[in-house]
Amino acid sequence: MMNLFNTYIFKKQDFNNFSTRILLMLIFTLFLGFFSSCNQDQKQTSDSSEMKFEKLASDQTGIQFNNQLKETEEENVLIYDGFYTGAGTAILDVNNDGLQDVFFVSNQNAEKLYLNKGQFKFEDISKAAGIEGGNEWTAGVAIADVNSDGYDDIYVCCHMFLDPEKRRNKLYINNQNNTFTERAKEFGLDDPGFSIHAAFFDYDLDGDLDVYVVNQPPNHNETRNPIMSKGIPDYQYSDHLYRNEGNGKFINVTEAAGVQNFAFGLSVTIGDFFNDGYPDIYIANDYDYGDFLYVNNGNGTFQNVSTLAMKHISNFSMGADAADINNDGWLDIFVADMTPEDHYRNKTNMSAMSPETFWKFANSGHNFQYMFNTLQLNQGNGLFSEIGLMAGVAKTDWSWSVLFSDFDLDGFKDLYITNGILRDIRNRDFISYAFDAFKNKKTSNLEIIEKGPSMPLSNYMYRNDGLLHFDNMSAKWGLEDKSFSQGASYGDLDNDGDVDLIVNNMNQDAFIYKNLATDHKTGNFLRLQLESKQKNHKSFGARALIYYGENKMQIAELYNTRGYMSCSEPILTFGLDKIENVDSLIVRWPSGKTLQLKNVKVNSVLK
Image (cartoon, rainbow, N blue to C red; front, side, top):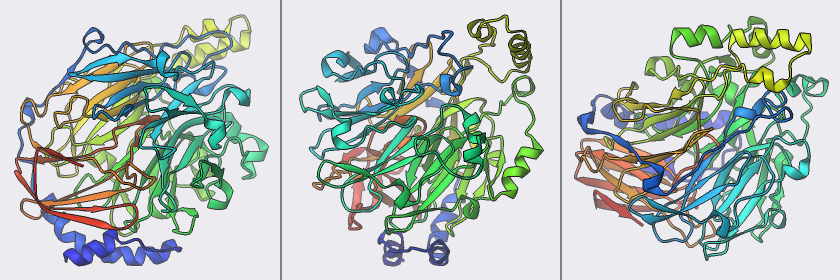
């Protein structure tokens, strides 16, 4: 069975037809069913009562960052829909010293880069590093070794302004001395679209990193203009795919690759969702246009199969992430929406969905879309089953970033969700007031905006119970702070084996949460820092599989763009509960080659 499993799960296949691939995927299900049933029949045994996060103060860490947003008559949510969408975070290793550093994006102010000095002490090197930026409106960030010199580079997305020169994305190349030089134009990555997020990955498996850039129109009303209604996308609004030519240049292959589109994209998630060795793309789109699930055809092109693979999706899709939540060998997908959990906010802030709009899009070939979070359980046959309500994660208010990681190290991926919008612009009383004010034409934009209710909300932390259900542990784990949080990243900032959290807040200091899982010995772990001598040094796209205990298994894929506008550490962490030895570890490299190790010690970092 092991050899057959390796053949079908890890061997690169050249499938150019989606329907043909579904038939072969049925074979995968037969071999994975045994492991899946064993995993799902066993409840978790670890005691999470000692699990906790500790919020560290800025005077303790040295991180003093606040995504301070200033509303003016010219710059506000009435002029630009995305004014409150926030900014991202990233975890990277600037100087290859083994300590994870922290990067924050600021919408209106300078970006910040903090060098990790150890023991949760950080030094602000932003100005000296040359990454503070200019007068752009910046949003998302992606981290990758773009020039293949072994050092992390920083790619920052710009949007909002109508002047395309102010929207050109920034690429900060690492000079290997804690400084960076902006070289986006030189590399062909100064995308002038309304960019919100980006992900580096090797879509054509040629050994170097390509990049997918999520763009969106400046306002969602653009989706209703006459050109768009005829299905003709405006190129500056389309997402863009750039192919790495391997010579320091990227070329735009959007149309040729079949990903030219038009929607209000907010996040990109990369993963091999069909277990054929090729990375696929999931795009979460806000408003009426459905999400895109681009299956990689293996020949340089993609096909959107969202309506074939998913029966329904979220309506206001925000951030997304992918992980194997039930340890059956297939990546599942979570997408955040914006439905409140409590009755009061649900009635005051959210109007009912329009049946006319719903059926207009459904009858035109789009997915059914419902206004709640969706958890798409991968069935291993090319199809997904949506289980968000059953899993207890469907309603988390105005959510942004979502992150899967085994925070308590019990062997199952937990779920963290950021939450909150600076002003409740969908509050019904506020909408009524604003409508009257516009009609009377006696009130300025700023005066109208200042009447908008502002209510900070708690972020959510859900513990995976191993039975396709999640328990809300936000308060018990010390994560109940109220905020307007958007971007978030995870990474082991103190090298103790568990992953910590950083959160980018609007008009509030950033959150730095230390994970106390290993301090309280809630579970054992195995961490994999995969490295390659090829151009893809961090081995983006590598997949690791572990077998342990009584017929238990886990998989994880190495991609760092996760959640919303953000990047997490490029290291794989497996929680192992009380297991003291991993029977077998198999790594499938992006090239398709595999490495197998036996009897791997736990509580270690393999490189």
